[in-house]
View 1 (cartoon, helix red, strand yellow):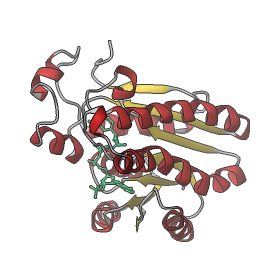
View 2 (cartoon, protein in one colour):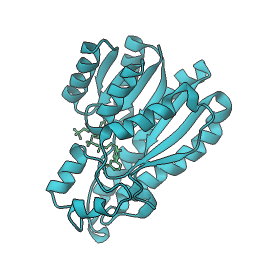
View 3 (cartoon, protein in one colour):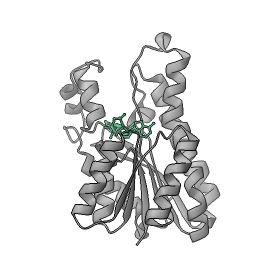
Length: 247
Ligand code: NAP
């Protein structure tokens, strides 16, 4: 049984991914800054007959990540599938972004993936096999209003994915990224309710070839594919799961 670690596994696409990977037969380390949420997802996996372990950690804090990964390893075994999903959004006009908010957005969305990947990597190197799936955003591909810091971090994820794929391909490890479109999660709900978009969200999704908001499970299915044995010749790619939004 392979072990996966899903960051931000307590809610939204991380929750859907944790449940999906468990259904596919993986043991799942559910890591989240919200320990109760991670616990709830791990309990659901175990209640359904799967194997899971919940850990609370902030991915931008190396000491917390090291403690969490050690706990996952000793409960579920070496981690050979990593889903760097945890992220935060922030909305501000460029001139209004201050250094604190810039650093927070970069530290969670970009540095967090670097810290968690570096912490987990020895397990994959020892196994000579691994799957890394990083969460970017379609905003990195199209640009997004009042999200300069967020899209800069998510663009960094795409570049990091490619460069890491070059380094890790010869070691049997694939590195890919998912660029979700507009997906109905707690993050998206907060943005909709906070009127963060320039037009009503239905107007945004109406212009997509598939004219609706996406479901977390539709993204989890793409992650599960990248994480599978069959995807072993696919690396350095970014897959848009976005209803065709970038067409
Ligand atoms: P979500 O609903 O906010 O869920 C994210 C989970 O990650 C939450 O449980 C959150 O906890 C946790 N988290 C936040 N900061 C963390 C940290 N520093 N360390 C560990 N866990 C942390 O988000 P989502 O919409 O599922 O998004 C998942 C990923 O897709 C993110 O990287 C996001 O940027 C990206 N994305 C989302 C959309 C979309 O439309 N939803 C589109 C493109 C890309 P708290 O709730 O306590 O903060």
